[in-house]
Amino acid sequence: MTIHPGEKNHVCKVCDKAFSQEQHLIIHMATCTGEKNHKCEICDKAFFQQGTLITHMTTHTGEEKHECKICGKTFSHRGNLIRHMATHTGEKNYICNICDKSFSQQSTLIRHMATHTGEEKHECKICGKTFSHRGNLIRHMATHTGEKNYICNICDKSFSQQSTLIRHMATHTGEEKHECKICGKTFSHRGNLILHMTIHTGEKNHVCKICDRAFSRGQYLNTHMATHNGEKNHICNICDKAFSQRGSLNRHMTIHTGEKIHTCKCKLCDKAFSYQSNLITHMTIHTGEKNHKCEVCDKTFSHRGALITHKRTHTGKKNHKCKICDKAFSHGGNLITHMATHTGEKSYICNICDKAFSQRGSLNRHMTIHTGEEIHTCKCKLCDKAFSYRSNLITHMTIHTGEKNHKCEVCDKTFSHRGALITHKRTHSGKKNHKCKICDKAFSHGSNLIMHMKIHTGEKNHKCKICVKAFSQKSHLIRHMTIHTGENKHLCNFCDKEFSNCYSLKTHMAIHTGEKSCEKVSSV
Image (cartoon, rainbow, N blue to C red):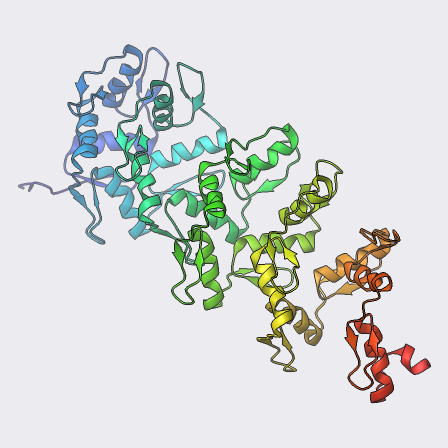
């Protein structure tokens, strides 16, 4: 029987992969059986194929005969040089017959095909994650074992993957041959340049199937997915606290080590950041640059992430749902912040007085008590009241305009901002998810629980500067201040009598209306 070129009659009985030549099948079988008969006599490392052993031996001998004439990089095997040349020529001869995407290497095409077929035969026995290629599984295993066999011969730093070591070496050699034509930044590896270019192009091809959020890199998407599935694989080895992202774990570790990881400093305000990208985003606060525009309402934002979050206010899409009270959020970060109201977790600790807070913003505001720093930069032009955030100022302005666009569908009551409407709606549902652990009293809103807790703790942080009397709530202090100022803002429409607070006015109004709305009035 005549065998036609390209025909694959030699089939692996383990995984059904077919080959055109029997010798290729024999070589492949070793990957299925796990048999490694080709052993290095120097370091005892074993390989499936003799060719791989020969290539490995050059790591001991230093022999690299095949040199790239464009960039001077040398290779121990001619096949590696041929594959490397594609990075210069941009030649991509391996085309996917499903989506027409092209690749420079056949192995990359094979891995890509698994995204269409869903074929993932190599499963991690520790976490159950599956891979379409055995090499990817082997690299993944290093995340569990912590094995780092690739050691830098200059600084002794070790890595789990050879490619990571190669990129690291460029930090010592200073070799950076791949330059960005837009901003002039140089990279030691072409792959890093390609990833960098997405900053300029805004290209984000990795889309979350749950909330449609897009990312420039697959690893960012994988990290993001943890916000949906609640998976927390990054565990602190000191206190066993778990995190969904490695970066969150690294930041948490500084609590134990005391290490300062903020190395990128702003030259204008001395604020420091762990990553250069965060500093770049921060700089827009000083420059006022807002290049990201909403196509619906023309509102502009300083960075794309804020625009994406804002767009959800138009779609009403809220994919991040609290499993305790069913409250839904348009952004995963808001859900994480909200969860602290149920768990009582307070991870943000003041390094001066050890007071703990559930949100970073609350800690920042608290710190001004110690520093005396004024963080209220957004001033109201009508009453000179100042706010830390522009969004708070916008909400405040409704007091002056009287604008109430948020209407209750049950009783038609209107509110100036959405948060007040949400709080009000709970009076209809009767749902009270915020329970006091001391007296079991329940509240429909977390802030009410916080205020209630001060009854038990006796905490009174709002002090009068004139008579030093202290109050647990700011509103009580404001009412008290009218005693000193003599200010009467609440006027009766019937008899023009003035009152210092709203409560006194309501009590007085019962005289005219005959309404007995509280026990005090009825008893008089």
